[in-house]
Image (cartoon, rainbow, N blue to C red; front, side, top):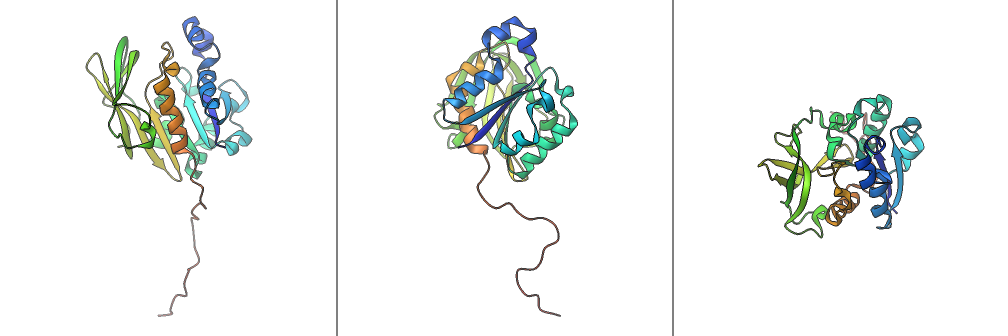
Length: 240
């Protein structure tokens, strides 16, 4: 069984009654609920827990880490960021949601500012599937339509994705690369745009389907990891 840890800074839920009304068990609780229903082994972790809930034991057990953050990116300890980054390079899958694009760990793994345009104006969002054969798009039609969402617009300052699965159009006219796969070391990362805290986006069944598909796609490959550094020859080297 795949072990998933859902990480959420869990600050909006404490500060904004609208968010706690939409997500009474936190954004992490809402995501964990539909993942558990998919027969995944799910844990949650939040910013204010010791070591942000991401102890060495938790990270070593985690096959896929899901990350949601917004208000408190700077409060995440650099030591924990480095450990998460190393686990991704070692093969752990990482799913970064919505405003997690500005998280320390995502920016470190991308090597860019990860900046973008944004607007909170109840834009309608249409998330177009541009790679219909991709496993993350399994079960999704031509597009996902969200009645209200925060707008993210290009330019999105990220490296060119290894795989681009979704592109969003917004009512105000902007477009955005909203479903991107990156390969780093032995691990895979999926960035998925929707999920502003004041909208019930994670209750949308199609959004849930994408996240469940992504867990299966970015989970570690069951193979022996490459060995790096000085290596002995596989064959006898003829003396010249």
